[in-house]
Image 1 (cartoon, rainbow, N blue to C red):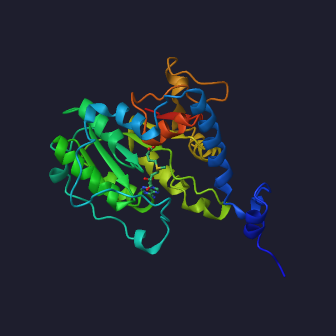
Image 2 (spheres, rainbow, N blue to C red):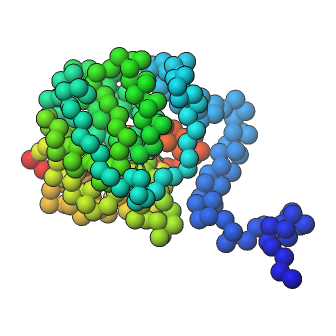
Image 3 (cartoon, helix red, strand yellow):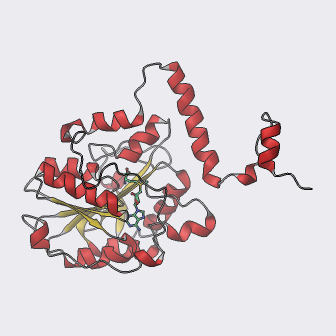
Length: 291
Ligand SMILES: C[S@@+](CC[C@H](N)C(=O)[O-])C[C@H]1O[C@@H](n2cnc3c(N)ncnc32)[C@H](O)[C@@H]1O
C-alpha cells in the first residue's frame, strides 16, 4: 500500500514535506515570511503591512469609506487573463464622461490593484494630468470607483479590463497624449506553462511603444526577480526607440546591475509596501521614448 506523503508528515511531523508537493512559488513566499517573522521578532513593535499601507496612504483618508454594496472585498490569488470571460475586448468609454478635461496628458497603470496609488497621484496633479487604471478584477475596480466618487476626483478613472486585449484600443481613442505607462508588480504566474498569462508580452510592449508620446515614459517594477528580468528583457529589446532613464538623467541612480535605486513616483504601491516589509528587494526600470 502506498502511504500519501501528507499522512507520513502527520505521523512524523519533523520530516519535511517533499518539495514536489508544494507549488513553485510556495518556497519563494515562505522564505520571505520566515525572513519577515525573524525580523519582526527583533522589532517587537513593528507595524503590519496593512497598517503600513494605511499609513502611507493616510492622506486619502479611505479607511472608513466602506461601500455598503460591496462590503469587504476579498481577493482571489490570480486571475487567468487568457480564459474565456476575459477574452472580449472592452467597450471604449466616452472620454468626455470619464474625465473633466480629456485632452490632458494621460498616465495608464496596468494592473492597478486597489487603485490607491493612482488616486494619490491624481490628487496631486489636479487639472494637470489624467490617470487611468486597468484592472482585471472587477470588485477592485468597483471599490476604486466608489473611492474616486467619495474623493470627488475628476482626473482618475478605473476600468474593469484585460489590459492584454484592451490597452491598444483604449489608448488609441484617448484625445490627449499618453505620457506614462506603469506596470508595477504584475502577477508573476510562476509556473513555466503559465508564463503566457503574464501581462507583459510582445504585442503589449509594441502597443505601449506606439502609443507613447515622444518623451513619454514606461515605469516597470517587480519584487520577483525573474518577472523583473522578463519585463526588462522585453523593453531593453526596443533600444532603438526607448532609452533607460539613467542614460538621460544622471540623477536617476541605478545599482551596478542597472536597477533603479528609488521609486521615482513619490509613493510606493501596495504590493511594494508588502514586499519591502518582508525584506524583499524591488527591481525597477524606467524607460523614455526617443524624441
Ligand atoms: C500583484 S497585483 C499588483 C497591484 C499593484 N500594481 C501594486 O503594485 O500594488 C497585480 C494586479 O494586476 C492585475 N492584473 C493581472 N493581469 C491583468 C491584466 N491582463 N489586465 C489588467 N489587470 C491585470 C491583477 O488583478 C492584480 O490586481
